[in-house]
Length: 224
Ligand code: FES
Ligand code: FES
Image 1: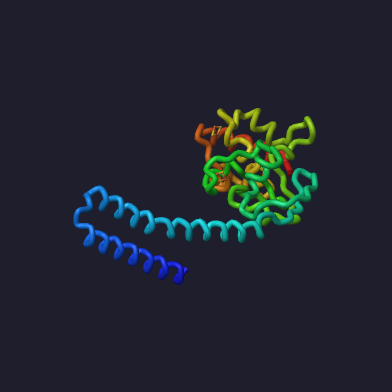
Image 2: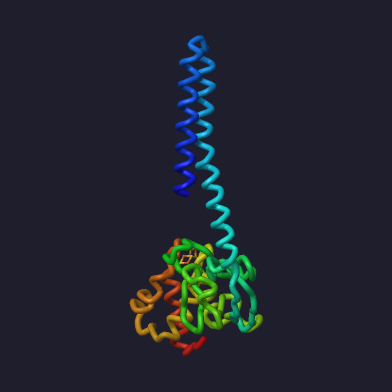
């Protein structure tokens, strides 16, 4: 790169010197001729930078290709998947875009709303913050895998009974968190439930009804 820039500067200087010499020996040149020469110098000045940049980009692309996809073995809703995937893909995007398990929602995509909550090896996780390749060999459960066929999970049934949703966008994440909240044993009071569900935002404000559903399920001794 240094060598190229040095050559480039020399070329520009030489071209500019030639231009001045031409001007001295052709005092009769018109203003239009002078502008043409100036434009030529400008064009030469810009071209090498663009070319160098393009060359750098190609090198970057070739380097990235080496790491484009890596193997992934993962179990999702009791089904084993053996695939390869770009390391930059989040678990959320893998679920939604590759497997079309769109029950898991993308809200903020920054770990702040809880809409993307799934279970990984039994623990609740914001799938937008987890790269798919970080879950090699793990077992993932999404909202689609919570029910037993046509039979709703007790938490799903309780959400319906207590009107634990309005628009429903946050609901899959709320239910996955609610199941984990019960399994973690954080249901000793309504305030404790609220605290341990605080990572799941509901713009419709269905919080009291969500807590009602969790209280009912926890009293029934639910286990996911
Ligand atoms: Fe993952 Fe909001 S989408 S926390
Ligand atoms: Fe609408 Fe929670 S039910 S965001």
